Amino acid sequence: MATLHFLTLNSLSRSALLQVLDHAAILKMEHMAGQTRSSLKQRVLAMIFEKSSTRTRVSFEAGMIQLGGAAIFLSPQDTQLGRGEPLEDTARVLSEMVDAVMIRTSEHDKLERFAKASSIPVINGLSDSCHPCQLLADIQTMQEYFGDLRDLKVAWVGDGNNVCQSYCEAAGIFGFDLLIACPSGYAPDPAWITKGHGRVRLTSDPKEAVQDAQIVTTDVWASMGQESEANKRIKAFKHFQVTPELLDYASANVRFLHCLPAHEGEEISQGLFDDPRTHTVWVQAGNRLHAQKALLEYLLAG
Ligand code: CP
Ligand code: NVA
Image: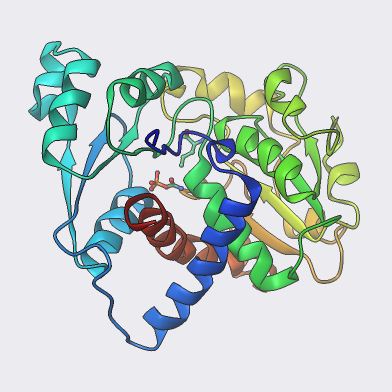
């Protein structure tokens, strides 16, 4: 049987994703009840980080430990990857030694090349194209607050970046409506909008996007690797900040999500996290652990 990878949400079928999410809810309850598991005993996840991370690293590492296995952190500086060893050779070598590989990199193409040469599951821990692990946690969070996501109204305010592109894909899979408010020139790639199967619309007006939405979400204006564009982006996005006043246009039961890290004074106003409507972000961050444990069990233990 072909090796299962998780490079985008569509790497798994809708029913497999729903199964992973149902399992994530069970794992969360078990974790909160202090129950332990050893489903991945003796199994090892290698994690290659070409960019910084707090949540992705800690959730995968803690997740593997909690399931009875272990995780190894690899940075390009300390491995032969940084000295030019081909990705494909690294993939073949790691396939002999560990049970799965998580990779955070810029070019999505690198993930695909790695996966092609790998006989063990490869997980996308963020590329410049998408962030499917983040969406597993976000969908879990949305389900916790709203149940069935069909026809839910989700507003994305800001950059049409990697996380936004995974939202487009998720809209198509889970059937929610996604209205993206972004400045001209910062929309998601049309190919990703197409993955939304007609559920994704664009506007240049944040208030229009947020109107009656149950979920409002955003992300940084300059992603990792775009630091040199930061000043230009601050100007382009200045009317796209999420504030308590903007959230007032949303549904009365709106919940705010942010993949984090957040930049107060940029994509969110100073003190926004004091607004109770935004406290969901901590639940969302915690769900990275549960959703990815469920994903690891799905990919490694079936
Ligand atoms: N949201 C997210 O992926 O966070 P990290 O960059 O800290 O992993
Ligand atoms: N869009 C952000 C997400 C970080 C989790 C970035 O790529 O830096």
